[in-house]
Amino acid sequence: MASPYPTDSTSQQHQAPYTPLPTAGESSQNQSSTLVSQPTRRADELARKDRTLTEFMLMLDDYEPLIPNEVTDYYLQRAGFECEDVRLKRLLSLAAQKFVSDIASDAYQHARIRTNAQPAARSRQNAVDKAGGVAGPSMSSKDKSKTTLTMEDLAAALNEYGINARKPDFYL
Image 1 (cartoon, helix red, strand yellow):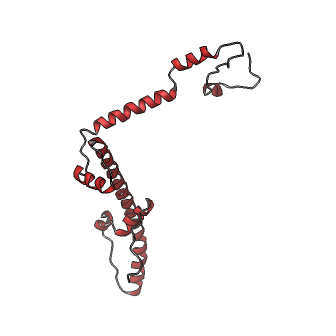
Image 2 (cartoon, rainbow, N blue to C red):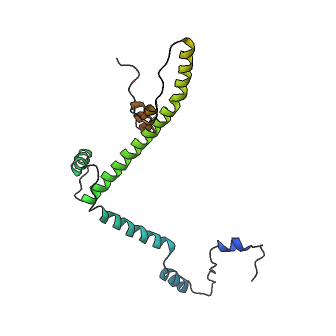
Image 3 (cartoon, one colour):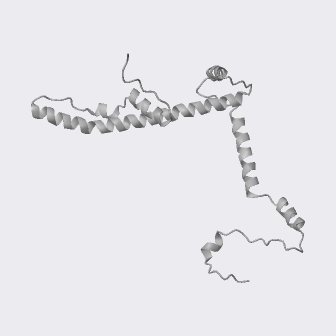
């Protein structure tokens, strides 16, 4: 039966196949048995994820994280977490390692932005100093390639993760 709606070849490629609904005279049992026997896309995806998770947990048996197991055990004990599965502890250690790595990477990016913004300010300052007769410090190529991480960079990176690491403005 032809459709009254105009169709083109691209729209037909992305449409799901048509399955007719059972009429009042047909048994819905025949259709439900065919639907159960065919694996669904969702079931395939869940099975693949389970296999992937199982393989990943087996890989954790041989993996030694950068954070030692004793340190992980100590902090898990302080938090009240009790578990004898070494793989789960290593998974938590790996998550902590990734968290610290992300913070360090973000802090490095803040430091690079800060150091790239400074030469323009320094060149303006040097021009003012030279006009006034006082020579300012010049920027060497060694200074440009060296990046120093400051507490302000780290505090800005931690602030992105909702951690306040800034010192109070005034000390009493």
